[in-house]
Image 1: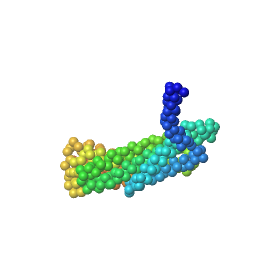
Image 2: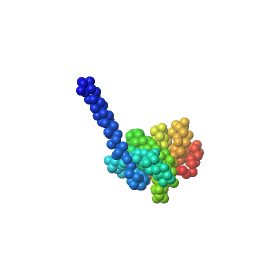
Image 3: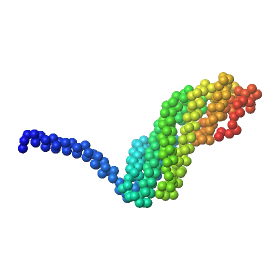
Length: 294
């Protein structure tokens, strides 16, 4: 055998070996991700109860520490489930008949449920990181220590904004779920209940952000009004700020504030004090506050 032929055979062998090394991981991944159709109903259940669990964790994160490692593991599993179901929804592996069509549609909807559950779990990590700062900020605000309150709020705000974003993404994904594609009445009930709950939490965070946006914009005026409300003395608010501050405070909705409704209501009540103490005619004169907190 000639030297050139030996070199050619050796080069060909190396090329084949290199090709095998490159594609063998892909072959293993494909084999690993092959779906056992008997497990599909279990994935559906895992998705809907994942949403249930992540929503419960989110609610708990406003009150106490959550197990971060467990939540991160849950997020990983939910994303994996969402990916498997998304792939199944695009596959004809389950057949092209009516049953196959129904399973593909169900897989698409449950994939969205699982993805939204991961987003909700993500939001719980953000709230967990912000909870103590939020509580300190609100406590200090009611004590009229406005600038101290803002110091804590500025630490909490990035986490609150990220939590709002994750919840908004989850609600958007859930809005794309066709309830008729879910395989049981119980699953549809869980979905509806969690959408309602997440909507309320989203509104609560919106009111919290709105409150501190006002405080950040008018810190001196809020501080003066707060001390005045405690002492009963008239606060000296610049004339040019009165109307703007009254308008901003009137837009707060304690009824949507959830667990923060009390603090939001207390700050909104400064509007009444502003009218009573700052109006030309004493009590009742001024800016015409709404008759309720709605």
